[in-house]
Image (cartoon, protein in one colour):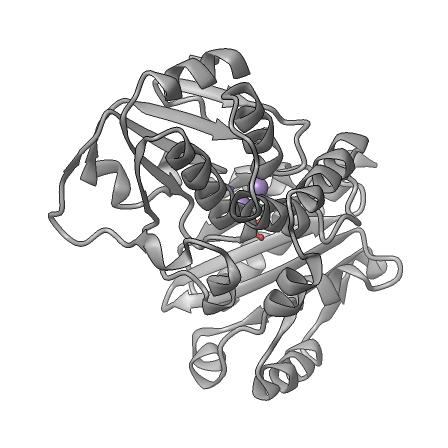
Length: 316
Ligand code: AMP
Ligand code: MN
Ligand code: MN
């Protein structure tokens, strides 16, 4: 059931023990929104735990509360008044779904949200879930401090490509300005998140050699099979390098993370890439979406390209 921001605040107020979670394969918004909300609710005297069913990249250790993020273990069970799932639909929270016995409040900005939670606050116009969490803290009467600000700024900055993407609105910029006024040091976050080991920068260069151009240069992508990923982990930022190629509308990366399991990222400058992701059971936003294809790299590549070309064709 969809609810308003005021109702969302009321649901949070009426709970005392709260578990927060976000999507597997967590990004800056998933982690930043979880921790930002955690700090805010703790300021209200709530007992709050954060669990994410995945490893949290070490770069995020710059965020206050990073070390408090737990990973569910097999058979673990937690009773709480409320489970809050941020930046996600319930099908992507992994083992947390079975581990926490509580009603679920879902807070999200993905237009593809499946509305399966007991209560859902969805704002598809928000650039990041962190933008919603900031409004929610205001609704709850929480005064934003530096710790909350650092986490929420990270969500906002990463989901907007450091305030460059089309989801960046005047509201996004006003929120960012408010967060800076709370004591956020923006370069501390960007330097921590942009830092790469030397070998990874070199990997990025070699992965970029594998970019292929399709559909007269309107589509570009790179596929890394399981063997390639065993040799070198997929470099961060690869999709961003594909996206900037002149004339490219749709950019993709396809990574065979486990044998016969490929993680796909999609970006566009115009086409609605949720139309592609949804065909594989994924989702996301108009210009940034993703999905998983349970096939080997070569077969998944063929399926993906076929759907991209179909969707591209249908739009013209
Ligand atoms: P990524 O390429 O992983 O950065 O994801 C781009 C956007 O699509 C993010 O907003 C993700 O949350 C969303 N997304 C990625 N994979 C999936 C999926 N399997 N199901 C739903 N949404 C996804
Ligand atoms: Mn996310
Ligand atoms: Mn997000």
